[in-house]
Image (cartoon, rainbow, N blue to C red; front, side, top):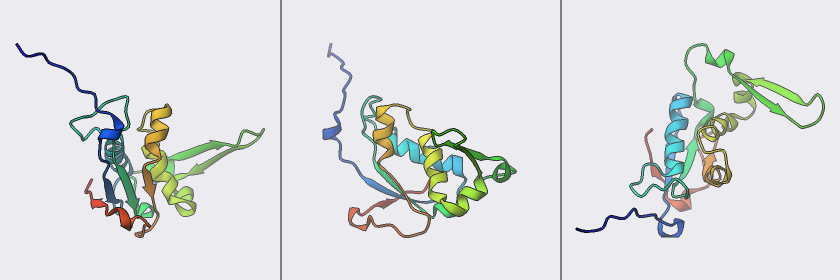
Length: 145
């Protein structure tokens, strides 16, 4: 009988691709879970939980992402500066006016591991509020989530 081994792929052995995702009209949670899956590398057959085998993702038109139902009025974002009285709470609509790319980044970050590996994976996410991006040289492949 042949022996069966589990293959663990090293990060250096994997070729990382670039994907382009258009967030125009997409629901935030569904978009974020699809992007997190690609960043983590779960779409690959050689997925290894303790290695960063995922691909790069560019999200454009982050300002046109949407929420369903009453979520735009109810959803809040909390941030504390670390100083006494430094707590700030912003609603979804306020944050979309100021920095819409943070809405997508926060949603994706919450779906990644909360450790060193998660921080390393998160650096491969590039989010832009409009339809332009400076990553044309990487020749990103259009991905429909």
